[in-house]
Image (cartoon, rainbow over all chains, first blue to last red; front, side, top):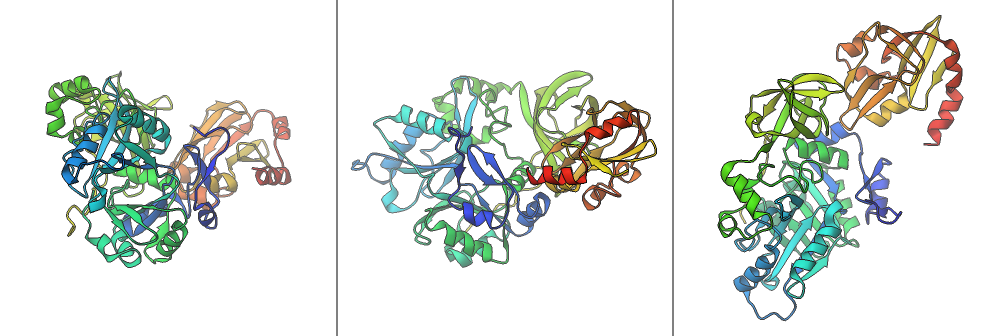
Length: 387
Length: 124
């Protein structure tokens, strides 16, 4: 999905090129794919901390028009009610500083994108939301948000800034030493702004299954922040290659692969992202199908799959039971932590129970595999910080 | 007989009428750590350019094509025994994939010699 022939360069392009030559196109951006090697980078992130440049993604601020008369909670409820026209999560119910994972759904109950919505806690930010969508979907997402809320709120793109992810068990140490000691006290899935490296917006969140942060920093302040983080003995640069193997081990969905306009949040095993108030109000796009599947169960389900031999089963591999096709792999590869192949895919609900043995048709040969619970590698989130 | 190379980064070395085949150092470096490889059974025949084997890294799966037509007479026991590390450590020696009984030696003439392959890789 490159834009009109020209690939976009990251603001930190020179900083990454000084460290690797392995780049590749992702959603029209020329992104670093690999530094010292996918497996060592993966293991470093699980054991220490990795710094990822994810500036291709779509951060934005969504706010009530300037001069709105609403205060505090009322302003939040208003702006949240606007974005709730597009997503099934309870955004009105966000506490100040809270972040929620949700999806933009279509009228058929399929997923158009998955995203994070945060409610900044700062007193001046009443009526603001911080929204981060996927790189490949951002233009479409922003257009649909604007179309659905025209004249009632403003969307300000922030993808000219840098979005850096610092992930791993040492992330809190490096972040506290280099940015602000208060970062170590944040709870997982919260947002906070800091007057450091210009003014940065930090969420304690990530896409690796590890503790960590995603930091929105202005392009002019990003080189100093990235260089300082990379100079920390616990931090190394990590490419998009390891980002994919880390998220797969963590059982997290990749949009366009594990989620698409035909899969519903219920099929994707993401019912937990639709809070009770919204289920009762039935007021989000695709509510009819999504709530029917919530009550009666979906026809197919996203599951974890472990091949019983060494052959990786990648996207597109078909899944069989007793000679009948029952599903397809949507993401698959190699798990450095388990030292073996892992996959995610969709299977008919009757075959989705962990422990079921199925066949994967790899290059024309059926190979045995077992349905397993997700994630493959336990999450390592800091659920309760001091703030 | 010197070593010949394909555009798909296989190497082939003929001794008598048996050719030893593997992937080049460049290919191994591009792939990264090999996590799986699948070799054809002894006795199977391939035409030049057929999918013959598979090599997978954490990143991707790649087909290995038969650089010349022939019948498999031996598969590398190290690789069959899941010592895939040898493909990264010694791609052009101990990490060979298979030995083929070559059907038509003139097919080797269509492949690059070492200097031509080095130039080809430089241009990638």
